[in-house]
Length: 181
Ligand SMILES: [Zn+2]
Image (cartoon, rainbow, N blue to C red; front, top):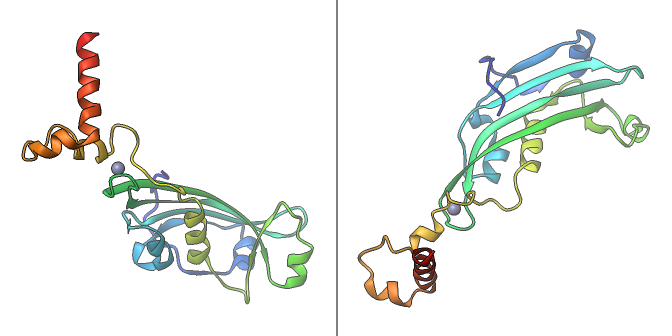
């Protein structure tokens, strides 16, 4: 995760042309309340988004944006259905374009950030990057997932379930094997 060295909040609307002319870097935080799109994609946003951005003109005089965004979020583990913490981090690398024509001549390796006017919604862009970086299947790592213990022998109030449950039979087999070793 990015270390939040900066505590100032990043404004939603930025003007890349102006910022690039100043060679300006922006670092700060974005409150979870401002990230409704990301919130739709996860269970909870557990930290402000931590952002570092640099605006500049490249050798072809294109306006470029580079940086990083990170956030701590939680999702639902698809095995045990309990809360699962995920650290998200995404690199940002875009060329700012203002028209379809500029977009058309942009080299294929550059991802565009298309603006309608001088100002662009940076929070929407950062949210999109974080959503893309979400794991497709989210599960607790091995050993941290609550799923096996849910059916494990620790449950003392379900004796009959204990006998019938295939997971417990497996558990008992494992115990037996480890005893003989
Ligand atoms: Zn789990």
